[in-house]
Every structure is written in structure tokens, then in C-alpha cells.
Figure 1 (cartoon, rainbow, N blue to C red):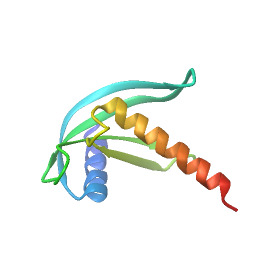
Figure 2: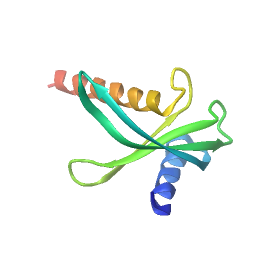
Figure 3: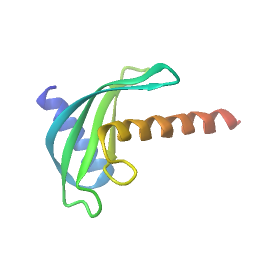
Length: 105
């Protein structure tokens, strides 16, 4: 994990959630769905500074199909209470987006 990567995640947290953050730890994670790896990588945990409802945020980045970096920042608010739950919530939200986009013409 590079300093630039952590700073990019902190910028994403500031942009998405409107608060500063401080790096806390890295949690390696592998999430499976229907017997297949749905996501594997490191989740960065950040302590939030001045957020009204959450004290932590879980964040990670990935390259999309166009090789452009995309960043995800999920607040620690119920039911999200761990890096694993953050990844699960993201996977569910992406599946819903895909399903909704597939139904539109």
C-alpha cells in the first residue's frame, strides 16, 4: 500500500462523505458468492474526523474495464459494522445496479 493510494482514498472519502479521515489499518479480505470469489483484496480502514453519524469508513480502489481507478468508501453505519460487511454491501449495491440497468431500455 502506497502513500499515494491512501491519499487517493482519503480524497474519495472527503468527496463522498464530506469529512477528513485518518488511516487506521489494512484488512485483507476474500468474499465469496455462490461458491465463487466475488471480491478479494485489502480494505483500508479510516477513522473519520467530524462526520455526524459514523466514526469509521471502509475504503478500497480498483481499476475498471477502461483501466481507470474507481474508489469505494463505505461508512460504518448499521448494518455495516466491519470491512467484510462493507464489501458485502458494495457487492449487493452493484448487483442491484446491474439488474436495474438490464431492465431498462
